[in-house]
Length: 174
Image (cartoon, rainbow, N blue to C red):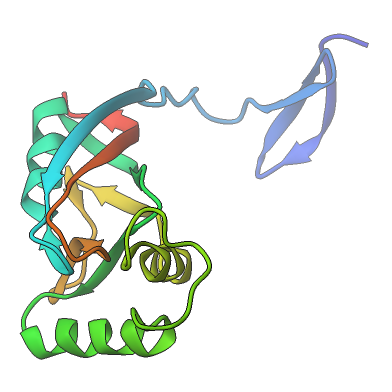
C-alpha cells in the first residue's frame, strides 16, 4: 500500500513508499555528488628495488580535485608489484628485497625462462606481494601513516617502464 505510515522510528515516522522505507523525521540530507576519475601513470624503474610514487599519486588527487573517497591503484604487470611501506629507513627496503629473494631465488631451476633468467622469480614475487592497493582519501589526501609511502616494487633486474592505473571514486572538492 503506497504512502502508508509505519511504526515510529527515531522519534519520527517511517513512510513506506513502494516497498522502500524512508525516515521522514528530519529534512532530507543532500549527499555530495558521486565523482569518479581514472588516470594512467607511467613509472620508470631502475631495476630491482622500490620506486616511490607517493608524490605522483598526490599530484593526481590534487589535479582531479578529489575530496573524500577511495583510490585504487593497479599495476598492469606480472613481474612488478605495489606496496605501502616504511619511507624513512632504507634498510627496511633492503631487508624486504632480501626476504623476497629468499622466497623466490633468481638462481633456482625454473621451467619458465623464455623471457629471461629473472622473469620467473619476478612473477613469484609479484604474486606474493600485490598488484593493486585500495587507499582511503580524506580531505584530498591519501590517508597514509606518518612513515608510509606508496611504492612500485620492480622485481626484474633491468629498468622498465611500468603502467599504473589510478581510479578515484568519491566526492570532489567544491
